[in-house]
Image (cartoon, rainbow, N blue to C red; front, top):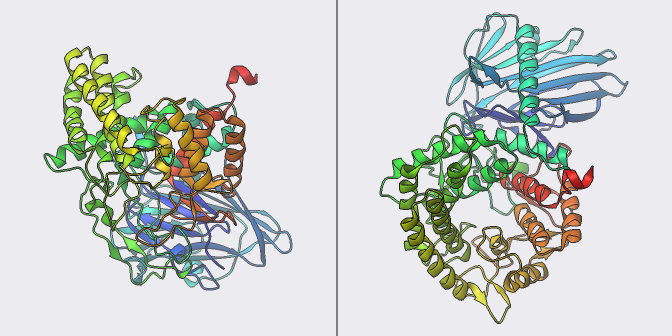
Length: 596
């Protein structure tokens, strides 16, 4: 069976797992989001007749399966149906709930298996691996548990099913419910079933309470809620980091070599994620991320900021190849680490300021930012001023060239502009005027350099007749007015040259790996937002509805899709893409007053 991205996501902001439509764990890293994948069959060229690196419940005489989330939760339900109509339900989740006045989010995955109807005969396959597929995990059996050695931790699988049947992979008749708990190597001091069901109910309550507090739009509510929950699962609560995706090396297109490890925190991507969650009123993730930024900046000192950091703030993300994993559908290489950490990307300073801005204005926060925090941000502002007209690798992280990229320049301008606004709010009038004047100078120079009169559009780099989709953000960032004729013309020009059917490419020129083949989902969402901005709302709504249809069966998106087949490609679930769903829904939805 060929791997695909019809995958459910469970997690608790400490760990996560990807589960395919037949209820098989195909990707799960321990003891945290960027850890060693103890289940890694997603990158082992399919999950065929004898899968390795997985945790599966095989129904004898299997015919079909369905999958859905419990409403407004991160609890996944898979139903296996046999040829004779027999049905088995599998419930998967990672516990997360309030306990002792804090969020309880253990290194733990819980699976509950129960018969719905018929004579259910199952076989349980528990086949973890370690060191990125290099070897099977060494195991040691206890009375009702199995202990496994992994690269980063020893973990324990506790169950109330027959341990002999589990270890020998024998067929068993499923009469009573089976509960399995995978996690830290610690004894469970109550019955496995009792703990599993108690944690299930507590986790269900947590997520339903969390979603109840979201300020969602009237239309597309289910899509927005699912995107918001999944974005939350991509945060690492211990430090506040937000990863770009939960996977590594799902290629951007078939056999493209564009295989990257996205289990890290990009300062730019995280800003857009936090901004989207803020629009929904989910401010706690922002507070955690601001703590992460503060620690990263403090650790950097006078050194330049990297575009990407590890989820604990670590700076060395040296890129290695996992030789024993053939890759998604055999399309290696599988990369661990990301060499982009060495790149120069000037937009990061603006991203830090923009991400921090709300903390000065939002009275809901437990500790609003003050003048001392502003002084720290001014250091990033100085970098914006010094670097906005200097070459860098740009938003698309070119590995083979540098230019003065328009998006990086505009993000630097946005950082300086927001400093002026923050200073005015704090009644630091002299500093406000200082930064406002710098923003004025920067804005004029950028406009002169990236507006191409002959093409009639904004370009991707200073004084170069080349195009990319990032210029669609100019109005979103308040760099130009939404009715600026130059922005309207740019949206039109991009639609003619980067659009492929209802989707948008990042750019249409060769890069380090040739010409991109697949559309980049966030760019399509940027285009939809831009259309709405310039009053082409009907067209924007049509394209948005189409994008929602391209989500997998659980409402999730990866980074890229094929513009003809609609097949999903790239790392998954992609936070950028989920941000696009939220932002477009918020922009395009009728208001509650209009609808009711």
